[in-house]
Image 1 (tube, rainbow, N blue to C red):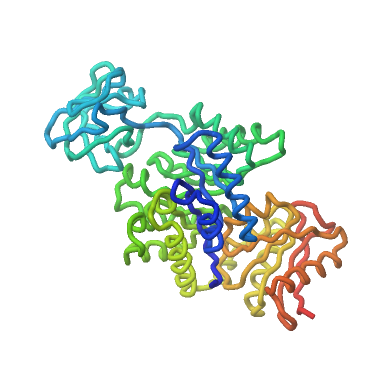
Image 2 (cartoon, rainbow, N blue to C red):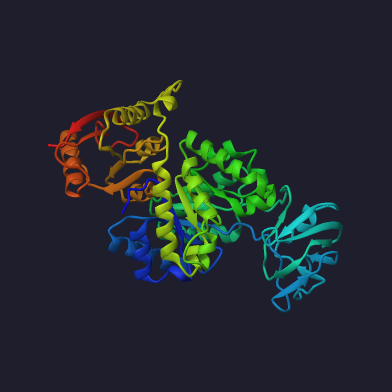
Length: 477
């Protein structure tokens, strides 16, 4: 299999929950599995998490599990016939107090606050912008609208307001329950839907830390950037998170399709500059839900995200409910590998004008720079917390980074870092012994052979998080 730096996040669903298929998908290149908490009960997610861990073990790989919270249900209610045809120019009422099923004249709302969030002249986008309503006025709990762009509207479709401005909190009572479920199976990452600011992420972190305290488990937090309000607060959201997801579906509906590609590039750049992880998501291989091959545009889309420097590309319905989940992963892995061949390494430019106040960060950068100029076969980092490999992975270098850690949780978390191959290795408390163990570990796996030069970083004394203070250049005996 071609060496690949970009990671693949695959959403699990009915199409990919068969143990043998899941194992094949992991072998084909899945590095992280997303469990979508918008569907299914708590026990379903616990069962699926066990399924992932077992399949990963059979495949001889460690994969991360990401629990993706549903967030606020900003949706319409149900229709008497499951759907209704909305004709352009027709009047349509969204009624927060309505309990009976909807029809072509109006429907109830799951999101009861909507009448307080809109005013005449506002534009509402339903079902990912396929249906557009203009607000004529608000009468008590009723929002009176005119259909601007019509079509079929079915049960529970999402509502966005053009330009943003919905007041729904990022974390609901259901999300708080779901966080407890996710901590029960030690989810490596928790993705928070619709955060507007850093406070939403800080609250999510507190909830995760409290729910995981008993097992001493602290997940990484991913902020899904899908609201217009999140854009001006990006820096603060990044600082409060471990990573972000460029969630292009809802974001495009709020800010307009045309604004999204430039935002994607900006978000990826900002995340990397701040030593955070970034996942690019939504419709990457959409046509493969029903077709065995992607469109040329989808190939370009995935390749461009890779060239932008994303850590991971993500599938949604393609692997959760599509006809070709395994083929989607294989195609995605091939596109990533090909795109990476075209990347420019600009380490010298990256480091000009940079200053490092921390010893461990200086060592990480020194290892990258030296390995690149010496043409090392590999960079090896002995790590407890995973910080050193994370810093290294923020810079483009065509040398694989092997992160050896004694902690399973650290290994799984690092599965999402670009160009990092996390391996589990018990480490001796004595430095020279640990360095020998690392070399023999990589030789046994066929990663390095006699004569190869590699760079290795570690900390003295061994095993102290944040203690990386040594860089050594070695030749394999």
